Image (cartoon, rainbow, N blue to C red; front, side, top):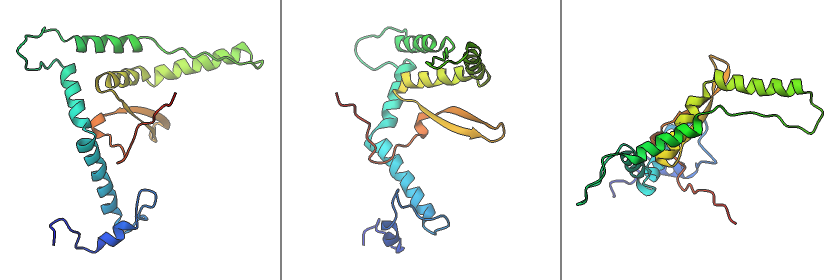
Length: 179
């Protein structure tokens, strides 16, 4: 008998469940099902796609790690400087919301919506979220944002998540735009 062969009899139960047909709440196999799904996603991301290795390499370059070569390198980290300058340029101004309509909406109402959006941007402090998102995208080539509802404050939030905590579904493929 192989060492990794299932002996608990759950292999037959495991075959009847999948992502589109998960075990019902309270089922004795639910915990094992979701843990196995998480482990598959983690293995897919780390071993198959190699995302962790790539992200660690990109972060090391961003922080100025020098490759070992026989030729000396310039001490300045131009990648860090360029990334920081680019992020600052993209996020330096507040976004402008302008309401345009073909209907006969009075200017007072249009201005009220524009002012409401500007006030919301400042109240929610979204400038910091935008900066963190742009910076992650510049360093790692992707950014992970999560929308959530804050029950205590009765409002929606957008938070930037750590990319190492992100798991694509196994078999995940990027959408392709055909010309």
